[in-house]
Amino acid sequence: MPQVSVEQIRSRLAAIGVRKAHYEQKSSTPPERLARHEVWRHDYLSYPYMIGAPDDRVGKRFCDIFMNTTELGPDAKIGVHDFQKDDTLSQKFTHMLEEYGSRSGGPPVDVVAAARRPVVRYFENGDPIAVKLFAGYQAPSAPFLVKYGRKEFLEPMLREGRIRICPAAYYNDASHIQSVQDDEAHRTFFIPTFRERLEGKDFIEFQGHEVVFGDDDIVIPVICRDYFLFSLCDQIYYRLPTDFNADAALIIRDPALFTRRIVSHFLARRPEWEPLHGPVTYYDPYRDYKKVTVPEMSKHFGYAYQREMRIAFRSRQPVRAGLLPEFLKIGSLSDYADLVSV
Image 1 (cartoon, one colour):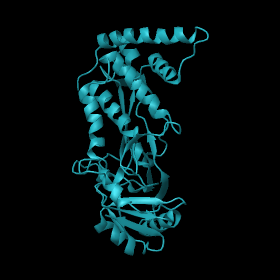
Image 2: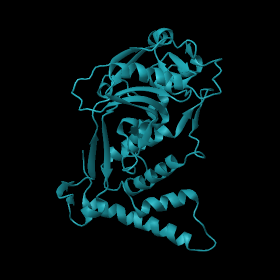
Image 3: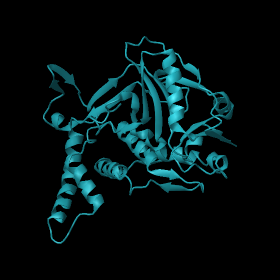
Image 4: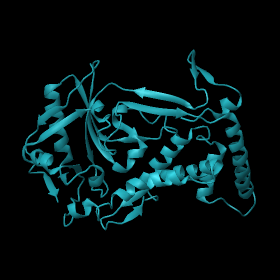
């Protein structure tokens, strides 16, 4: 991975300084006021946290942000994320534009192509499969959960309550499709070091230890013990059937009952384990150092568009390597779930 030299950081900071001064002068000249996106630009120019990161990490971040700024509607049209509800993605995207402005004048063509590729995939075979899957289905008005998957597996789940709960390590497998593949037991955070590097430092002292970072930002891996998880979604999202290679969806109209049954059947086998359930917390590895308080219920913000609801179990005792999936039978879901398929 090519690293960023001190000379490159100085050159980028010089360009950043000019743009930062422009916004500060505009802001201090009555009656001028900075537009919201200009405030975000100035925020980044005041602390360009990505300036010392290698190109491939910056490119990956651009793709993660881009993936979350789009929505797929029931009319099979691509729209934009509802920025009125949450403008954090707009801030991140604006920061990326400023960072690329100091590197190459804009996002490189290959990075933009990589960011668009997953979106283009929804239309490879005509309209996205979700359009056909949910045609004519009236979603419940009360809160519900959705499990996307193959009909051959969801039918036994509906009929008999057959549930497979996998250990987190199961998902760290290159054979899985991209939207499923994730290292669920590891969280990685980055701390910018461009100021230290400009001072000629390549390490910091932390709690009596030397943390060497060389020509990169500090990389902090957070590892949690293996645990079990079962993933669902909190709504019908038209991107997800394609993402999960699904031809069916199970709509669970009583989330509380479903969760209680999974928890009770799992704890009957493993009473020493602790249940966790609720929405996943999505963290930004460069900005959310304190956001992850329960690692088992957290995930990289690149997956935020999936709006995962999770039922998880963590052991109160040390976990030996090699956990295997648990297969539960929680009873028929037919009274409180619907199966839709193509």
